[in-house]
Amino acid sequence: MNVLTSITVLGFLIFFHEMGHFLAAIFQGIYVDGFSIGFGPSIIQKKFKNITYSLRAFPLGGFVSFPDDEHKNIDPKDPNLLKNRPIFQRVLVISAGVFANLFLAYTILIINVTTIGIPYDPEPGILVLATQPEKAAFDAGLEPGDKILKLNGAKLGSGDAAVSSLVKIIQNSSNESISIEIQRGDSSQNLTLTPQNIDGRGTIGAQLQPNIKKETKKTKNIFELFEYTNKEFSSLLIKTIQGYKGLITNFSSTAQQLSGPVKIVEIGAQLSEQGGTGILLFAALISINLAVLNSLPLPLLDGGQLVFTLIEGIRGKPVPSKLQIAVTQSSFFLLVGLSVLLIIRDTSQLLIVQKLLNQ
Image 1 (cartoon, rainbow, N blue to C red):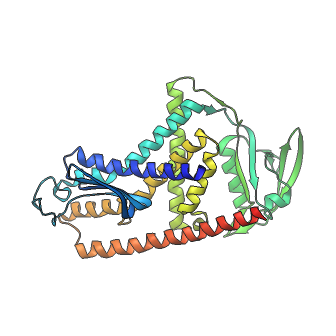
Image 2 (cartoon, rainbow, N blue to C red; image 1 turned 90 degrees about the vertical axis):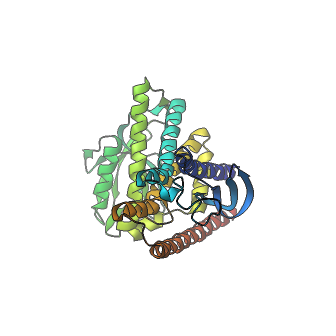
């Protein structure tokens, strides 16, 4: 049931993205001849007012199609064809899907804050959420639930700034001993960490977060509601952009954290076990990811189409069709190849975990 919930959320987010393109075209009077969720052969198809709506076999995306010069019933010079509209109108149609996903993510966060509330201000220290076996944190004796209060005798402070400060020191301390003071229950104790060197940076194999109470509180007024939502939305958007940036600047390290469709569904299933809050968080995260992903300048994505359109605006004429086809085909094989590799990797890891659980 949790997997079905995760897939349903993914389908809705894709639908909302494509609806952005669709409405941006319809409201400007631009001809549309197809609205599809998924790729491959149609499972369900219905034509209404010259637009074919379809649900396809592989729900990993979707598209809105527009009639072209080969359409028998339309004059190639018709001003309502997308290619005949001014550049700024075409840019609006291309960008609408990204803006739709960002708007949806923001709305979801508003709903989440309104119904669940906001966390209390962080208390001093850093909370250890999890540790990885045979890593520095585990070997030093750190346990989930521990609160790190001091580093080398100095107080760490509180909030994201404290976490960032600790992470930076760890990254710059490969194979060097670090003294920390932790609180475990009602007692305090000192531990020694020795970050391991991975790709030139220190790491301890622990998941850390600000020391925040599990309880939440209602927002005092609408200003606090939007202030907190803006902060959360900006944080998620920036972290997502940084993640994709890492694929270019530090591919070998970031690629290990890259998730394919199988892993995304698994994460969604896990979050949905937390109830409404987990589902809303999953939807907001994936919606922002869809927006950023589609902004990338790859021809099969909105960002790539936007680049072609802007180049046309600068040149005063379209990019040669042969060049567009060549670049698009290369992009297609790149994306499909990456997706297949991620599906194989994530499925293999999932099967291994299930096998270990069943032993």
